[in-house]
Image 1 (tube, rainbow, N blue to C red):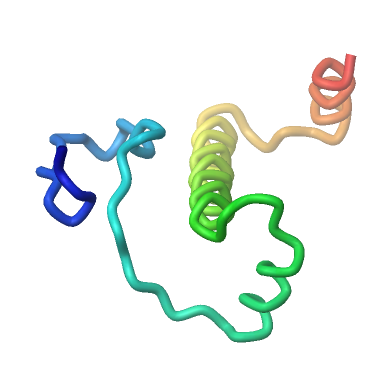
Image 2: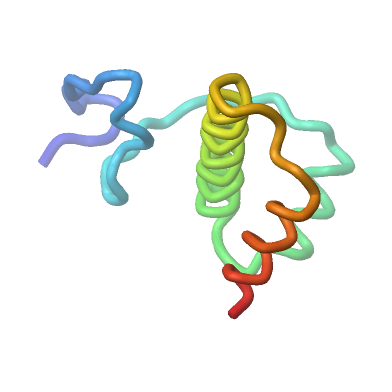
Length: 92
């Protein structure tokens, strides 16, 4: 079995999204000390799992922003009424 640093990179396209769970790559990050201490106190999982989830959530947010911007460019701004209807449907 290959260690994470020895794993061969897979071929992924930009649209493929994050790597499936189970595949990992070791990286080095510099994190604000206060944020790191707070997360270590609050985390219910490993710091790696918390960082992975935060990055995945940010990717989803950015992709959704892109979809909304594309929709609005084609069809115009989403009205407050449309937004309220969508939110009501999601919460139903």
